[in-house]
Amino acid sequence: MKWTTKARIQNLIAALPGPLSDFCYYRMQRLAGGLRNPTPVKQIDGGCQLAAAIQEQRPLDGARVMEVGSGRSLAIPVLMWLLGAKRVLTVDLNRYLRPEVLRADLAYLRANQPWLNEQLAPLAGESGPTSGRLRDLLALDLEGPPARLPEDLLRLCGIDYRAPADAAALDLADGSIDVHLSRAVLEHVPPDDLAGILREASRVLKPDGLCVHLIDLSDHFQHQDTSISRVNFLRYSEAEWERLAGNRFMFMNRLRAGDYLTIFAEAGLELLDQSRVVDDEALRLIESGALPLDGRFEGRTPEDLATTRLLVVARPAPARA
Image (cartoon, rainbow, N blue to C red; front, side, top):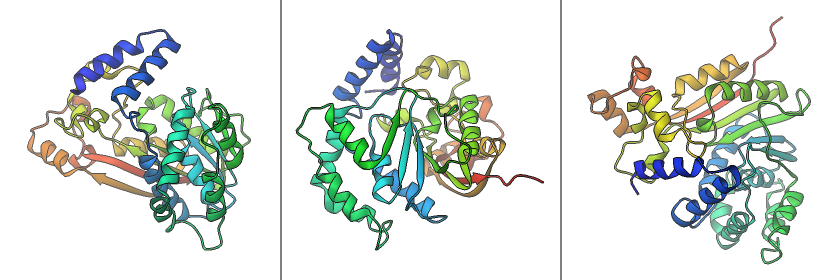
């Protein structure tokens, strides 16, 4: 499916009344999208990158973790629990969690335990809780009533799932969270809302807490339509892009790596580390002029524009005397 066709369909579905819109979009994803054969591979891969970045700074054992953007799966909260987190709070503006997706994720992990062990091995301490917790996780009943599986999983893993909930306005005490994280979420948040989420992260994190976010800066339409570049969306004006992808299902803020680092700093978060992936083809297109850029992106370095993945590790900035 060409990305423009997909964009038109999403805009039409987004215009439907709320519950009907959600139902139709989910059915479209199940029939012809990323949920045709759901697996937790991307979530586990991203979660392991987050966990590795966290563990370079502090252990996960006993940590209180908060995830922004639960989505339809609990793979990342489950992974953090497997690696020793004490409690995991996960929040989302919409209640997207689906028992059938949870069942598919757990069935995949059960059928591919050697692969999962291989992912966990570099992150699990020799005396950590991973093996016992994994045994309990894979023993969950996948054949019972659909509504029971989410309850059993949340209870077993100590996960507090809140949706709808606003990550920019949490009923949490100051300094009550050890780790604030997300995977492939922040690129879907409008800049003003993102600033609010990160200011709230600065408030709820402990002074030595970590803010660790894996951000996908690519044009997500390219994930299915490989005829376009991974930064194809940089050619459009704000008005054009709003018409194409201004719906709530595929909103992309198009912020570049430098923009994110500025927003983190303005929210009171001090950068500890960053890791970028620059797409070679995108870089060539930008440097050669083969990809025309909207005026919003002029004056940026080609490397910043061609960055398609950014991992940020930050902490609350020390209070100034």
